[in-house]
Image 1 (spheres, one colour):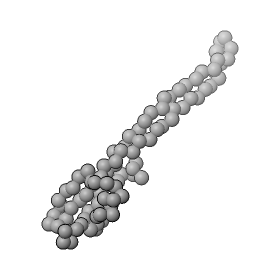
Image 2: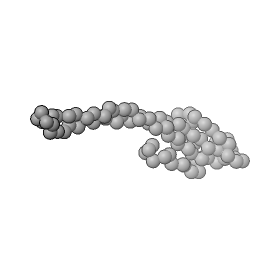
Image 3: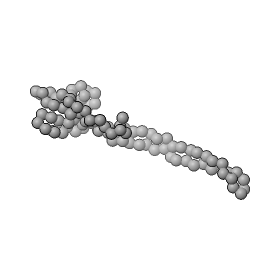
Amino acid sequence: MDAVILDYGPPDNVIEIGVGQRAFQWRRINTETVTGTTTGEVRQTRHGERYEISQSPGYVKETECFYTFFAQASGTRWFVTSFRRPQLECE
């Protein structure tokens, strides 16, 4: 478990899940910028041609992601036994 903590920092949650078993959980916010779009179209009117523009604004999308490592105690140390993958939007 020491190597995981070195890589990710201190866990956000530690949950006792059984005798000598814990879940260590890290919460991360993934931020993604979604660009806006601009489209145009020539339309015929009774006064001639007219160019019309349609726009959709960009936005920032945030996804909350949880990374969970399950560990078993051995003496005073914890050893990772399994890992739960986060939701697909986090990978």
